Amino acid sequence: MNYREFFKLGPVFGYFFRSKDPSRPTNFNIRMMHGINKISILVFLAAITFFLLKKFL
Image (cartoon, rainbow, N blue to C red):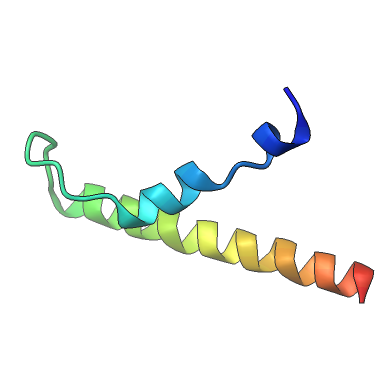
């Protein structure tokens, strides 16, 4: 595995922009879980960006 494959962000962005699947069950708990997951991914990416900018600038 090389670095390009290791740092692929395609699946991360696909998680945000995928379409609704009617075969998957939906309820309040699952919607909240996905909402919290999206928030945590955004905070993680913002923190990584902040640390990289702080280190290199």
